[in-house]
Image 1 (cartoon, protein in one colour):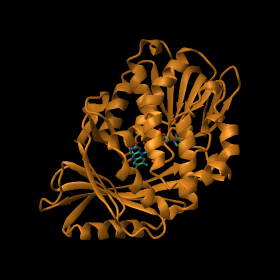
Image 2 (spheres, rainbow, N blue to C red):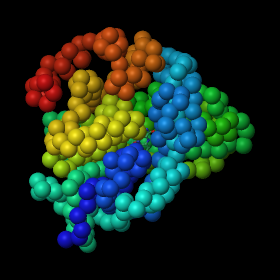
Image 3 (cartoon, rainbow, N blue to C red):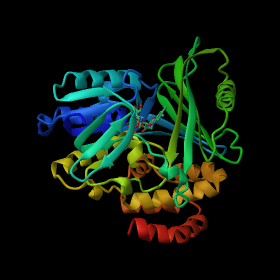
Length: 386
Ligand SMILES: Cc1cc2nc3c(=O)[nH]c(=O)nc-3n(C[C@H](O)[C@H](O)[C@H](O)COP(=O)(O)OP(=O)(O)OC[C@H]3O[C@@H](n4cnc5c(N)ncnc54)[C@H](O)[C@@H]3O)c2cc1C
């Protein structure tokens, strides 16, 4: 057995980096020995993180582009609104990883170890972490390595948010860089929930993503042909693809926090910190890390680290409806964007809306489908939430 640490992070991706970035400037952690075990510490995944937030924020130094005008589009509507005190913001993984990893490497109390974690076991007096070649022990472990348990649990349907995004560069100025298209459902839905997402960073450059919320993945050529078709429909024929990124994000209300034990807590997507109905994760990692830091200081058992609230219940119904009636996605989002202010929608999707805002948003959806889903899910709601 190797030396014992105060904290081990299994996985060194976004949630670990955000967490480390916070605790580096928190002197409670100055004398704590910390180990990060990451399978590929020298490989930065190609990811573009976008999220809405108040204009001035901690992350502003990493923002490569922000927008205060947002577009929602479907077969029936085109809605364009200003975000007043908020911005939609974009961060690229490369500069983010480099900056935080460089900071972490300068900390004498934090070590980064390349390793493939194969087992994590809470023994009550600490947690044993095994990689293929080594064994470590820690008082507390924060794990962001996803476990597959949610995939086989039939109680909680799993939709996938899956996408391919191209960053393209054109010779001619074709984009309006002041506007981000959050969802464009005007494309062929093929009985599923499908939309295009366009984030222009200049008149000549944009991230164009084809996204589905559905049960099954499609072939790479299908994603790519949909992007090409969309660009063609915008009259964009002459472009270079500078970067390609892909993603598969689980959308489920599976109670990930039930797996937390006294000294082991799952964080990030593995901890259920991804918003089930939207796939957005960045802001939740930011918020929940603050909560978890306070929790660690209070020295309570991680079994009590619960994040489920009334928004979990809304997500449960939404995912249930979308899972069984996947073709309704475009209509559901259209109603939500048509009948509510963007401010209320964003607060709702951030789990920060008022009850009045929630009633208005829920009231914009077809009632019977959700009432039926409510009664169908009542036993689950009682046993997992109430
Ligand atoms: C392409 C892409 C774009 C996204 N865009 C957005 C966005 O715009 N907005 C938003 O809010 N969310 C977005 N998300 C969702 C979410 O923010 C990211 O998935 C985020 O990276 C989740 O952070 P995490 O720490 O949970 O997981 P990760 O960042 O994936 O970190 C997990 C880490 O564990 C490591 N690991 C895995 N197995 C092992 C093992 N056995 N041993 C050791 N290490 C291991 C991995 O290498 C990885 O580094 C996006 C996701 C993807 C994939």
